[in-house]
Length: 231
Image (cartoon, rainbow, N blue to C red; front, side, top):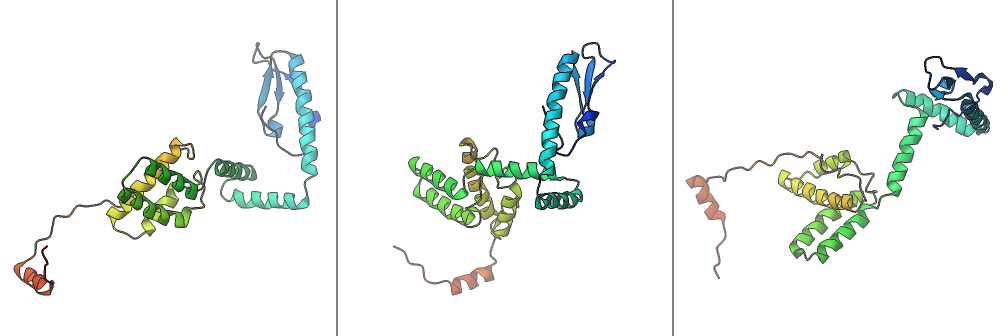
């Protein structure tokens, strides 16, 4: 059964009613007054048993609501008022916070993820050049997100971070590729539900044709160039 509104309820108003629109379930309990729908039953006995259970539950929850401290009630009222400006309520805020905390608890930090991923690259005998490139790029990323939980990191955070690097488009693309590989590994290890890098957009890299120097430009270049040593 779903939960009911945690407010004092006059349970006497709840009763089993005849439902004439169905021969299969001719008995009904109307719970719309407590924020729920209607329940339908095949027998009056089953309906009465459920009604007793519901009234006990509502009475208990109503008493618990009355026992809330002034601090909690004031916080709930203030939160409800502020959230209403965004079309949300306290229940939404609680569900959102619980979802965030559960995801965070089921995650690991990016410091730990990077360490594990780099160890795997070493065991796979990747080239030292490749491993060094990973260490440099991940170190820069972890300087900002090392303590961040894997499931908490968002596409927008990665997008903004890449744009703030203020590097050439090709370099930013390399960072994006390395981060995507890292997050794909995290998905396989169940540290993430999906790869947030996949939806990150970056500036396109446009291959430009090689420049051609005019004769006078080549002359100036040679005049300032140092001697060439052959070995």
